[in-house]
Amino acid sequence: MVSASTDDVSMARVLARFGPAYMQRHGRTMPVAHRAAMNAILMCRTPALGANVVACEDCKVTEFVYHSCRHRACPKCGSGLGEDWVEARREEILPVPYFQIVFTVPEKLRRIIRRHQCVLYPKLMTAVGETLLEVGADPEHVGGQIGALTVLHTWTRTVEYHPHVHCLVPAGFLDDAGEWHEVSRPWFAPQEVLASVFRAKLVAAIRAAVPG
Image (cartoon, rainbow, N blue to C red; front, side, top):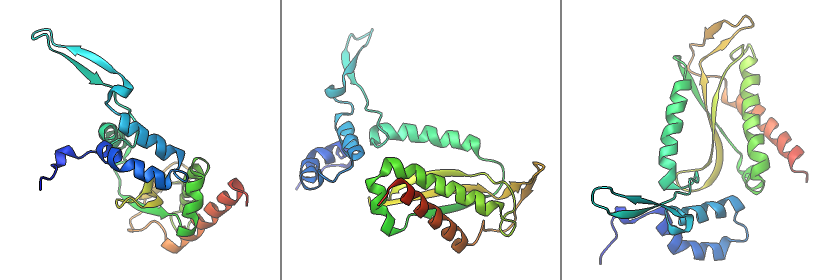
């Protein structure tokens, strides 16, 4: 038996082989954004998106360079964009210690959020930001104005829908006079406090945005 090498495996090949059967089973309930991602990956760097003609002035060889889809879910296009994003974030990091905090959506709410992604993803991020600011301003926990870098993840490494928000929070705060105060302890606030405030804000936002 001859097996394909890892160089022969690509997301486009996987979608070309298994995509039609998947669409037949789940196409009706599949989010529009996911269908668009599949189509973009399948067309990426193929004649479907057009091409530029590149000619060597020395050997006169002419080749077609097919256009990229530039979709954020495309492995061919996303790697470079991801590296650029990381480099840009490094320039934003302060020379201080950081807390790493992860907010996860309760399992009972995941299906609702998936059905209303365009409306509820911003609500999710707002709930996270308001939770950090509110808890951070409490003198019992931090006691001042904080900052945060937040990133939304919607899938796990095992391709399971699991919306969660990763947060990097500087271990310190600004007081009313704008002076920086570093926090030396290894935690931002008790987990149960963050969970309680976040849950209340997220549920209220969902109820307001998705009646019934």
